[in-house]
Image (tube, rainbow over all chains, first blue to last red; front, top):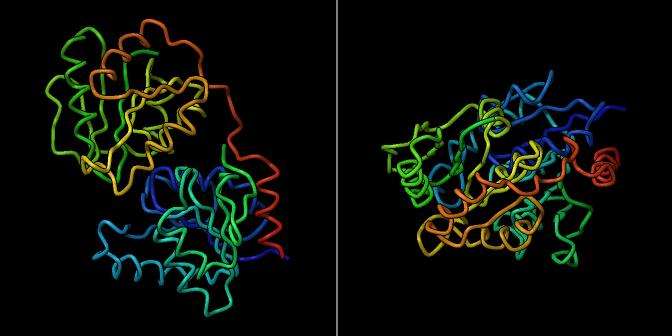
Amino acid sequence: MAKRVLAIASGGGHFIQLMRLSPAWEGHAVSIATVGSTSRALVGDVPFFTFRDVSRADWWRIPAATLDIAAILLKVRPQVIITTGALPGLIAATLARPFGCKSLWVDSIANSEVLSGSGGQAGRVCSQVVTQWPHLAADKVEHWGSVL
Amino acid sequence: MSGVFVSVGSMMPFDRLTRAMDEWAAANPGIPVEIQIGKGEYEPRHAKWVRKLALPDYQARVAGCALFVAHCGMGSIISAIEAGKPILMLARLQAMGEHNTDHQLATAKHVGIRPGLHVAADADDLKARASALLADTGTAPAPISRFADPEFTARIRAFIES
């Protein structure tokens, strides 16, 4: 049975890493959400959404980003969220969790010495957290592989 | 393939890189240099520049240039490897307000060791290496598939379907 999947990431490296995971949801009803509208050209023929970005450095943008992400969740009604970060992916997982949506946090490969800030928080919200570096695997943080 | 394409990343300014490559462009007037300056304040006076390219245009620039110069961000690194293009990088430093953490130094240490990836120590080293790499690009990054390791995506698929 095809699942409704929301694959969500911020721009730049987060989005490029998300696209490298595409075979994971092939055949499922995937929607893609990111920051840049020009990224649409790379996702193929699937529903595509954008949201206003936010990071810890500009935390005052959290309300706008949360509003956009909530609207996307209402349209997609995901059963599963896959995110490669950053903070917006954590917001999506947090908002969707009370509705029984499970979520996977794939910590960015850029975090090779410590888990990202949002990745550290993700353990409290997401169903599963994975790191792309074997030496960062811990009690509840598994290493399944990397995008490279 | 010709010229140098420079990208500082989209999230925060990185004028140290923009300025260094603009100075390099001034010293090498015969070589076309284009810089994607993102949110930087410094506007290049010698190199051609653009704030932000559409992602497909960015990828076309990476594929088409003779040398790709960038911050030490994974988007830049993955784009270079996917294009089989050597990349010369300068890491953003927290102490200079260029990023929230020093994870780009960690990226330089753990990922920058792959063939075809080059990490400069500072702006002067960057300019010297840009000239050296244009004269001899050395080994290109080994070509990789468009997608992550199939074992990795299979585990994510199992998570979706469980």
